[in-house]
Image 1 (cartoon, rainbow, N blue to C red):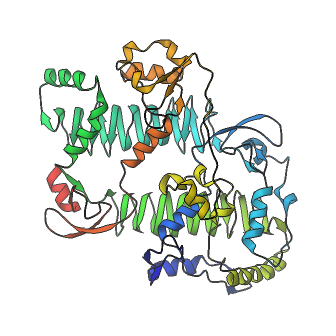
Image 2 (image 1 turned 180 degrees about the horizontal axis):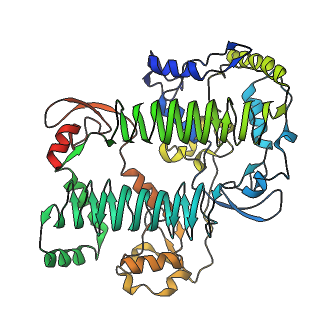
Image 3 (image 1 turned 90 degrees about the vertical axis):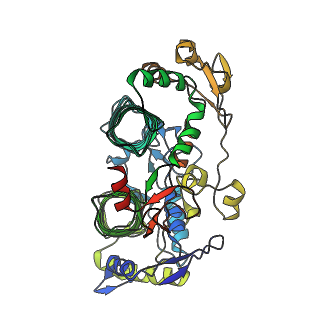
Length: 555
């Protein structure tokens, strides 16, 4: 089925396959033996993902107060929001019940009523579990002595990182597994003492490398396997390597550009798909029948899935793990046979729900815990629930709401606070033109002894005094002020790295810009001419090989 995105500013053509339609039909709810079919999507995959991500704030933290206990709180909810915010322990406890905010169903837009619930019901301030000294981390578990780490697990002494797992003492890294003493590394695993690596694995003491595996002591290299003492993809002696490395890393500002030039001379694999069967997309591992998906592992029979693990029989979901038969679900885990849900755990047969846990058979609810048969947070007998929900769905059908995720306009976060701004950046004017919210943010200058432009920082870490902890550094790109913390300074000294010239948010933005877009194009293998589907657009200059040609080339 060929469709056109209904967003007037998009109107991109997209395809909904028969398998997609079958999945949606399987996920559709039944009441009193009658199925209420979910219609096909009206938005393209990007606009659907943008809408889901608009309800997720992963990187903006604020000082707030728990609305239940009065305790100070570090949270992703700013103090100016209309709803209360609770500390995690208070939110999960028995000291309150979201049912007290229940609404009576009205003969009006159901999403308008959901928007009212969004503005009233308390939200949890931060999800961190089994963490120690990680007050400024968010959506993470098993962390210790870390700062500004997002969506991570089993990590220790990490700083400014996102999606790092089983990792120790890593700074400014994204999507790492089993890494130690790494800085500015991206989409890699099993690294030790590495800096500025992307798509690398089983490497030690490597710097500025791309797509290298089982390498040691390599610098400015791309596409190498089982090499040691290489510079610019050429073998050198150990003595030559150490001399060149010491000279180049004294001022590394131009090395990114040089690595990009080297990358144009070696073949790139069309897709990072490992141990998969019948799957398409990029960064897929141990999947079967996973289509048009990105950063997905251990999953089966799913399509248009993003940043997820252990998924089955699902379609069009983001940032969720351990779920089956789900459609348009975001930031969730352990969900079964549900659709249009967000920021929830342990749900079954729930639709249009947000921030709920351990619930079954709920429709249009927010903040509920251990509930069944609720509508707009109000409890009903099962028979009444099954009578009313089809009526609501029919009302939503007439309004064009049934089959849609929550509108961006009712998100509890402003657009530029949300992850949507990271993947689908818009200007304030564009956001307001769409009728969405924008938050004007201004950095407060910290109390410091001096402010120094990043360009005036010493090149060598040996020349940086301890007093830098009392300075504010002005970002070279954005002019935003930022500080260096003690743990961070100790790390740079241990790794002999210069002080960063960019604000942590700008560093993250630049790392993410190194990734290819989450979109597939058709082009030909530069070696055998076979047609391939890849995240490299046809007009890009990289040499792209199909999987067979790539493996023959590098091994």
